[in-house]
Length: 313
Image 1 (cartoon, rainbow, N blue to C red):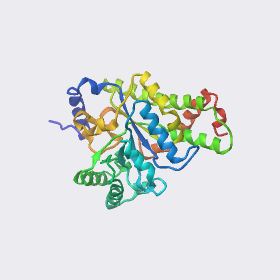
Image 2: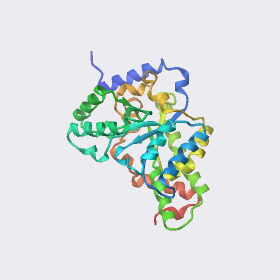
Image 3: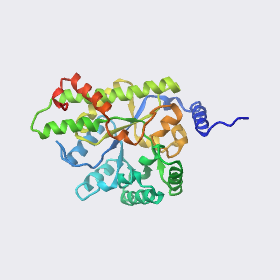
């Protein structure tokens, strides 16, 4: 009898697990994850941005998001913001200490990086050793990736995954350039462009998933802790709710692996979606940087709102 390849076995496991999932798990649910945390000031002071973002989410009845922490960004100037994440009950996630370690060839370098970040985050009440690590996207050396997964399992780390990535950092960059130049921006029009950009990405992923696996999987949407997110998050949550998406707490997802079949791929990060549903094909390391194609799409959202002056000439 011909043996199925391992990837096919994982897909089969996913299909079997779906049959046992309660109906509510198949609802249109979404988790917010924020990258680029603890970055410096823009049009807003860093602490003001953090408070506006978290307080605005709470006003829209979203009490918790996932904050991906690269601990190299923890300094005396940013420490108060990290405390605020924790005090308001946000889920703190170990994203390593230094992103440059992504391309180090030795396994011990990854281990040291993760342990260093763990030591910095361990004192915080809402850090539970959840990890989000770029090398685990599934595109690195298979032997090294396997060793790293074993290391994480042996040291009690808990996996997370993300499914949907939006290049709001590029739109925020264009906004900051405009503000630094002493020029004004129609913030309401910019908010519409931001919300439409995020909403289209979420709906596109949901549509593709429904076609391939027959239901709406929980999405983990990666945004960035920037000024536009702080300004626009209430409107974004309202727009998602209008489209039938319920923004839920990450603890609901990542503390219950039994009802999350993506966990069958263990620590594979974003590649879980590709394993099970054929989603996010070709989603490699550079996805975290807006490509020329991404920028053209974002320019289109700005143009539709009459914001041509933000687009580089």
